[in-house]
Length: 225
Image (cartoon, rainbow, N blue to C red; front, side):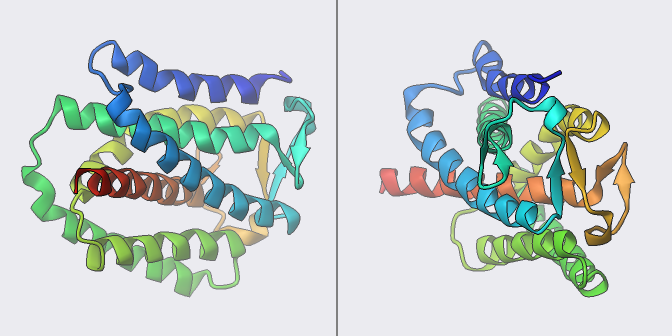
């Protein structure tokens, strides 16, 4: 069981490789934008996790870890963020290639406005819970910037990819939270869980993937100008 977390990281990395057998989602043109987007998103959310761990919001069970840590966070967790962003962008690219029609983009702003309302509600009603407040604050800021300040339009494609990413999300967090490899201070969450996975995790992952997709689209747009 020591290598269970590492095996999940490997599973995530393999997802884009498997998808490439059908459509080329890992060709050179995509990788030169995917890699920096993955790195930046992974670094930012890893830094937030370090703070969570230092203050006891997150915890890790050493029975399921190889024992290598950096700033109190196991190396597997850092790899997990990079691997999940990498897998998410692979799924995003695959769906864009497989289903290029973007006619539902006109409805994405309504979905984003709903998400903004949800973020504000959770921040207001759970203002004393660190995991909840930080998670929804980060997502709120990303949504506000991308929908109202950023000129790139990709949110329909992002929401489509996010729904697809829930499959590996539930597999990975189902294992991590039920072993348990990853634990949470329930005093810092709203205590609402789905198959023992805190509700906040769904939106933490959404924020991480949204940042990765935005950076991917930004780097791609800059290159084509």
